[in-house]
Structure formats: structure tokens, C-alpha cells
Image (cartoon, rainbow, N blue to C red; front, side, top):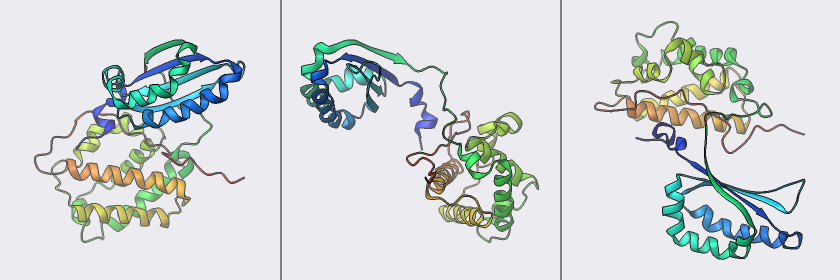
Length: 266
């Protein structure tokens, strides 16, 4: 099994910036042309994402930002593809308006701002996750299917899992600092031989516990929460199989809202 997070492809992406100066009387058609060009661009397997922006202080200035899987993917892959031919057919009339076109590597300096709460804050912080894991493992120990996996569980295990979930969902990095991070969590699953039936029961019991302790039940939070639980348990199942060779060192995953941002009623 491989995932973008483990394979590290996001570390190799290249960001291309193209700066245009488009006369005011051409602006509407320029944007319409790029709307058409976005179809083959978005279909290109080398393209991660794209965005065309217009300067608010100088409306003749536009910047196109395209994130490519790699510089080679852009220049040797996309540029030689049918998608590029269809893309260029739409934007050809505006090539003379290009003022600058360059590729940039991402650095470690990036993050999110405070306008959107973390899943950790939305859930209610560490205390909410401690209530969740306490209720969850109480039922796990009574369950005939998954209970045997936890027959010799450390009494502090629910708190440790709460610390893990807190870090995953945007809270303090206590699992990394105090418990050994991803490598330690990986070691909890190696050789366990988890079955798909056990995985599904684990997920079901956790979602029942989320309802019991009053974790937020809005669709946006639950979609993100369930997304992580599905991803994490499927990864744990794969890593637990005999002969598995999982990546040993990786950061604790950081989970966000995904497609749907938090809903705040107006």
C-alpha cells in the first residue's frame, strides 16, 4: 500500500507562476479563454491544481498559478501531451501578454491561518478526545470480535490514543514529543494480523462512541472525522499483515477539513 503522505510526492511538487498584463478590453475574453483551457489542464495527470487570479490594485495584471507533480512532469510530460495542445490552442492569443514565467520549489515555511478552526478545536480539544477514547475502549474490551486484540491493554492506552487523535486533528504535538510519534504508533499494529471484519467493527464502535460522548455531528466535521478513521484503519490493517513492509519513519498525519470547510450558520 502507498499513499501520497507516505510516498512524499508533495515534497517534490513544483509551482509555476505566469504573470500576464492583459489590456482592459481583453480581460473578459482572457478569463473566458482560460476557463476553456482549464478543461485539458485539469485533465492532465501532471497537474495537481491551478488558479487564475486578478490583481485588485491593477486589474490588467493576472497571475496563473499551476502546481505540477514535478518540473519534469510539466516540461517533459504535459508539454508533449494532447492536453497541452488543447490547452495552448485556447491561450495562444495571450502569449504576448506574458511578463514572467517561472518555476518555484516549495519550502518548509508554510501553514494555515487562524480563520478556519482546526478539527481539534471544533471537536472540543483534548478533553473531548479523552471522553471519546474512554467510552470507546470500554466497549472494545467487551466486544467478542475486537476485544481479544486489546486483552492486555495498558490502562493508559485510551489516553495515549486521545493524544494521538488530538495531534492528528490539529492539536498539540504531544504524541510526537512524548510517545515517539508515527514510528511508535506503527509498532502497535505490526504482526497483529487485523482482519477486515475487525477493522469494520472498530470503526463502528468508534462512531458509536462519538455519538455517545457528543462529538460534533455536523456533516462537515463527521465527514472529515470518518475520512481519517477509514484511512487510518485501512492503513493499520495493511501494516498488520504478515510480511508487511511499511514505511518506518514518517510524521504524524495532520488531518484537515478536506472538501467541506466548517459550516457556520449565518
